[in-house]
Image 1 (cartoon, rainbow, N blue to C red):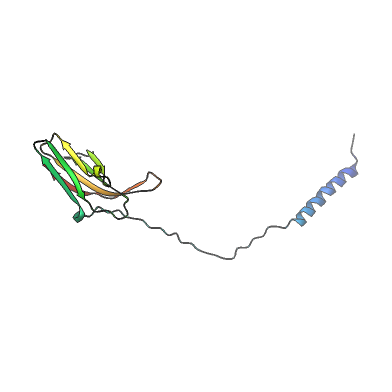
Image 2 (image 1 turned 120 degrees about the horizontal axis):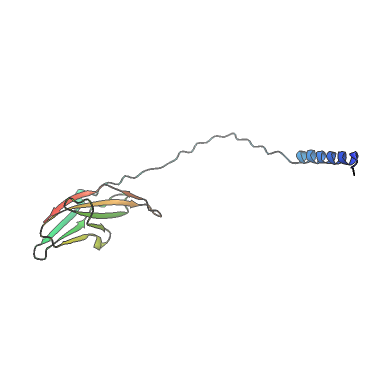
Length: 149
């Protein structure tokens, strides 16, 4: 069965008329940008320094009868911008610390080496900035002292 030509032509004319009316009735989007502006990015960096030498007091007590040496950080120079301070103690010329302490805690300020009559230890005190909400840590250079029995 064939369709009459007039019905097909009328349908095509109706579709074309609807498209033209739709385009004529819908306003086109126009935008005009006439201004310019500039924004500078502002940022700073912090440099962590070593603790102040003159504000730092590290002592060693050698007890020959008990065969032990006790190293204590009595005072240390706080580092500007640091939110954490630590001490690391190395035995002799060792490269791995025998003790790492948090200087904000009393237990982090003292290390006792037992069964030793004599020895040399390297004490490093430094400030760190632990970035809140992350595992990122900025580490400052150490103030190094050597103590001996």
